[in-house]
Structure formats: structure tokens, C-alpha cells
Picture 1: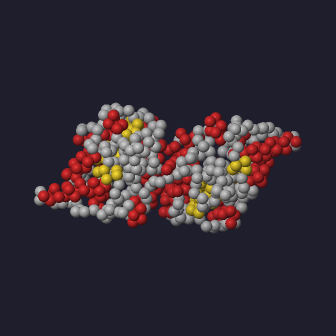
Picture 2: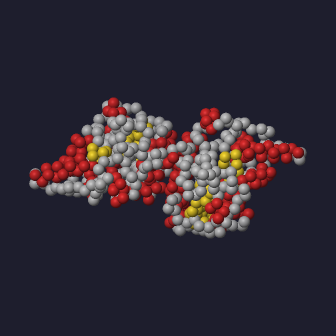
Picture 3: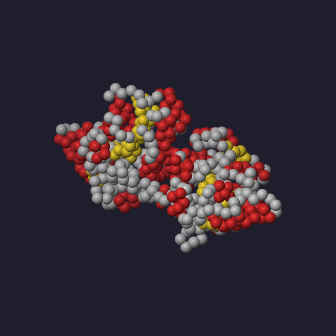
Length: 299
Length: 299
């Protein structure tokens, strides 16, 4: 049996869907049901349910976006940094293998020389580099707490998207904001991400950190162009076009920070060769995006 | 009634002693008795006890020293960074004034131009500056969580000492370690520190951060010389000399890090003029030290 923490979130729900569709036994908890951030409570859950694997899909991302983390620092620190440390303790008490959904948002830009940040690169968008949002700082600190974790996967997700209409979906975010920031990003198709996570423990790839983003990167402007295209395609077939005809962009990051944001965003390129060498594959980012847009439901 | 969290620790016990001796009503909780790190639990305590003021003397310092924080990161993060955030929430819910025992160990060295770090100086020994112990990182993060706290004092203690024989007492530490690191430090006489804290809310000085160290600074070698002197004084009066006749020192910080420590120490000089301007006074460091040594009990 697989135990999922944060089971009702955007990421946790995708894990549930995948495990259900592949007939894997699982049990999901949301923090509203039971406060698994408490070590003793979590230990009791593990003792009762005896999972063969635990998935931590819980975290604090801020609603509607990471700006909210700046004003809810305690919740953010608790959900993203302390919780992984607590789960580590509980899982190691019962010798349970587990995976933690971390984030690629602990990097900014590209690795020196290009090719994207590998799992070996020290985070450069963290408290340690003092240039980050509070959200990214706590995610990086969460990874620090797992530095000597045993039987543990750290799965790095980035800017999840899929064909579901959800305020957590990158595609929804892009059509909601009045203006967008042009940037290069590696991003993760949510269903491919959770499938890659499950592959990690099903294929028993070595424990450790994995960047699980769709190979390559894409600019915000490219995504909006794919949206405009998909809108036209739907119109040509007599369907409703749920996408805007055009998008506004901020002049630059300074303009974005001045007009729309309270805290800097991570925009970065990830290297996915470790995942591929381990035999885990995700579609190139353009393919994954086109598939999602084609099936994206507006309601 | 004054509520003390962390009431059985070295610092909490000194608060209890002071309040007892001045006939102030108080109630102290240790975390072993009740887990006040849980927001709901803490709110229940506040609702039941209705304190006029709360003192947070709880924290995670690591035993026997801060090296232990490197291997207990979750506990350290919970006790030093998250707990202040939780107390802030609880106190603001019930509009209760409170004080948090923070640490001057979020600085290293001296302020540019000398004179010690003031409360306006950004911590330079923190996650943000990426040069710190995990302990100092979490203490600085704890202050960050209180940046917009209302009706809150942040009291910065440093390397507490007094005349009590305790493994937490700086004087005991100095005679226990095989070799010492020569450094300049501002340090806090524990009973003077807690008296200064209580003065803050009794005199209703403005809320905010206060460096509560004995004015001035002292080198490790100077402290050991005072110990040798005090030993001689006791011997000349026919009393037992509890102090070593001589002390060993590391060659330098590099030698110390190589032979004895897992994580760098904060050695720093604090500026105490804000406290003095507010009408709160502590003895000059040499006076406070001589007083403590004169009365120091070896058992």
C-alpha cells in the first residue's frame, strides 16, 4: 500500500488518479483530515497503515501565487522545510522508503556553460544565495534537511501544467494574469511527473534527487503562441476558443517586480539527463504542452 | 500573570527565579509537559491562562553545543524559527504582548568602523550570508518570521554565564573544553539579561529588537585570566580552587575547525546603546564576569 500525504492538492490528486488507474493500493491523507505534520501523529499513521512507500505531495505554495508565502512565512516554513524533516524521522523509524515532491524553483537562470542545472548543482535561488522568494528559500531548506536521508527520493517538479482547468495549472495562470513575464523555463507536465515519480520506486532506481521536468525549456511567449494556435484550431473546427487572442507582457523583470510581484520568481532551465540515464522518460516540453493544450478543458 | 515557555531551561529557570523573587505571578510550561509548538495547543493555553505577557525562553541550542544542531536540523528549525512564528500568531489572536529570546549569534566579527552591531544591522552570520552554523541560520530566520510582529520584543542574548554550575554556563564550558578558541565576544550575564527583559515590559519601552549583552566585549583569554586570578584568590583564603591553573588554546580558527568543531561559531561584538537609551542598564562585561566568578559554585 502506498501512502500519499497532501492527497487533495493539485499534485496529490494526480498521484491518486495514476495509482487508481493502475490498480495500485493506496491511501491518501489531507492535512485537513489529520495533522501529519506532527511527528507522533505521523508515526501512528505509519504504524497503523504500514505503507510500503510514502509520497509527500504536501507543501505550501501560496494562493493565488508565491507572493502569499511572504505574508504566511510560518505556514510556508512549516509545510516546505520542517515537514520533510519530520517525514524523514518518521520513515526512518519504520524503515519506510519514500519520495518528497520538491521544486526546481531553487534555481534561477541556467548553469554556467548552459545545459540546465543538474542535481549536483548547488541551489542558486535560496536563502543561502539571498536572492530568493521565501517560498524558494523554504523549498531549498527542505532539501537541506534531507541531505542525509535514507531510502528517499527528492523529486523536483517545476511549474506544473496539464489539460485540467485548475487555478494551480500554469496554463490557467497564463490566461488569468493581466500581463506576463517573458522568461525561459523548464516545466513539468503533471501526469508525466507523477508517472516519473512512481517509476522511480517501481523500477527501483537509486535513491536521491531527480529533476523531473519535461526535457528542454520553453519561453512564456512560446507557450502563449501555442495557446493562440490552439484557439485558432478550435475555432476552425467550429469549437469555442477558450484562449485569449493576444497576451500582454511586462517590459522586463524590473517592470514585473514594480507592477505585479512582491517577491522575485525563479525562472530556470533544468537538466534531465540523470532521470533519462535511470530509464525514466518524459516528453519533450513542446510535445507535452501541445498535448495538454489540445485537451485543455476550459471548465 | 506572566506565561513562560521553555520554563525549565537555563534561561527559562532564570526568568522564573526573578519573577518569584519579585513576587510577580507567573506560570511556566516546559515542552515536555505540553507541546506549545502546536498553534492550537498554544491558543488553548492562552485562552485558559489569559496571561498579560508571554515570554518565549524556548529554543533549540544543541547539546553539548551547537554542533548537535547540524545533525538535528528539524528540531533546530522547529524550535528556533517556526516556534516564534507560531507564538506570533497565537499572541496576535488574543492581542497579547510578548518577548522572544533571540540570539546575537546571528552576527560575526564587528560592524564596519567598529562599535558593535546595532539592532539596525542586517545579520551577517545567517542562511542569507551562507557562512553560518545551522543554529545561527535558524535563529536569524526566527527573527525574519517576526519582522511584522506586533507588541513583540526580540531580546538578543549572547553566550550566557552566571555563578551557577551548569553545562549551559559559558564558564563551565570554558573549563570543560580541552582547548579554547581565542576570540572577541559580547556576552550576557544571565540574571542581568532576564532582569533587562522584564524591565522592557515593566517600563513599557517601545516594542522591537534589543541587544541585551553586557556593554563592551571580552576575549576568551581575558576570561581565562580572570578565572586563574579567582582561583589564586580562593587558594590564598584557604579555599578550594575549582579553576584550571592554565588553559590551552587552538592556534587559530582553522585549527579549531579542524580539530574540534563541525560548524563555524559566531564570535561578535554587539552594540548596546539602544537598550541604554531606553533606560535599561547592564554591568560592563568585566564587572559582570568578576562578580560571577567570585560567586561561582563548582557543584
